[in-house]
Length: 133
Image (cartoon, rainbow, N blue to C red):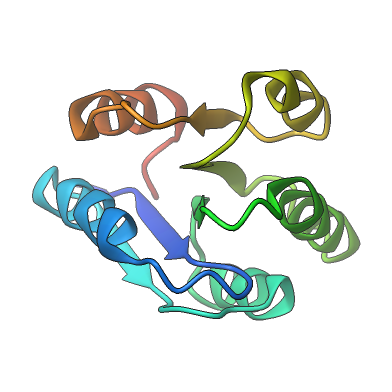
């Protein structure tokens, strides 16, 4: 049986806009990946707990609220605390170019800003994240 990449896709914080994250989740699913979408208003703790419980290879965060620096940092911190740094973190949303170097320095592997296509995201995931064994 072919292994599939399992991804937890989440909307952390108070942002209530979920159309884009649903489009990305569907594109990943259509590309043959297993996607667990946690829904709106998730805390970093809930997201990390779900990723560990689901044995996910990656967490994809969608953040449009402007709280990306805080939310990504908290997810990365929780993954370190749970000894789960093998889970790849990527995300997208309204993220200013000047914040991207700091996000990369904290360990965020992929950052997609407005205009990124679902094909770009799917291709990046396939190239970056190993399938489950």
